[in-house]
Amino acid sequence: MKHLERFGSELREFRAFALRANAVDLAIAVVLGSAFTAVVQSIVQDLFTPVIAAFFGQANFSLLYFTVHGSQFHYGLVVNAIVTFIIVTIMLFFLVVKPLNGLRRRLGLDADATLPRAPCPACRTEIDLEARRCPMCTEVLAEGWAAPAQ
Image 1 (cartoon, rainbow, N blue to C red):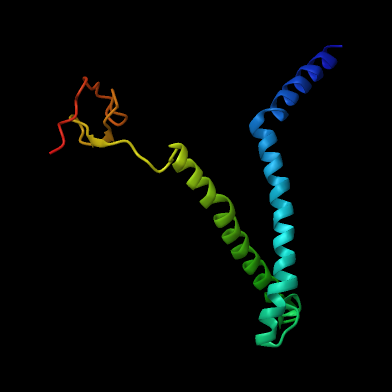
Image 2: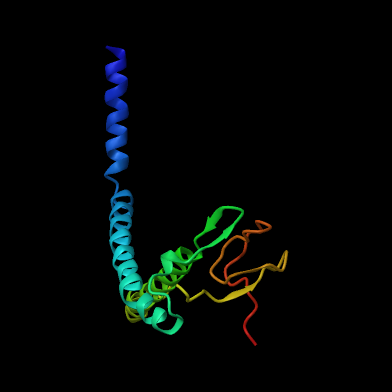
């Protein structure tokens, strides 16, 4: 009976973990990423590879290999993977990162914006002007601790 209670407790804990927003978001991202990668792989293998093959004479890069002491090294698969990686990276940058950065800037949520900084009076480490305690030396900083900008 005690084992059943313990199992039920662990099951509730697992359910709470699995249904957290970040875990669900991660699962969705993995599934979408897999689907996106499959589409890009198809584009690379069915569109780009034949165009490249027209210049180099090989219709299927996956068939390219060399042999050393009976072992085959399929460098064509590596070429396909590299081209896929580059295209996925470019597409993600221009279709996801750039639009989101533009939206964040328009909403005033620019993650790249940093607070003005000044050296700590005690240890001279650069810290945010709004700090009330230095994170390096733990010096307590009074209101208006930073020297005025000159």
